[in-house]
Image (cartoon, rainbow, N blue to C red):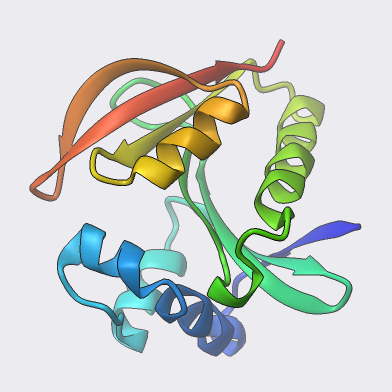
Length: 153
């Protein structure tokens, strides 16, 4: 069973490990293979998003960052879903998303959006396989981002 554990200061070292196990993504996002604990703290301990460590069989297998209502469009967004590099290609990503989607449906969300870095071909294939549909291009921190949406109802 997948569990979502809210990220706290005491858990940041696990978040950092997961992020830094995905150096290719980090390079795509900001040109650096590793992130600092300060960057992780500002990104995942804030009042804007809900950030969770993903727990499966007592292991931290990933992280998810969720914005309930983006002020730009009043829609819910997944800011990041990342599986630890050691657990890639084992089906965790799909299990995690399906479990998170159920949580969203229980909270009466009608849709969910995600932005994918244009160069992240693997992520695009993953999200499209889960039923997300492209609706526009956007810019984020100097990167072109493709925006996708999925209807939940």
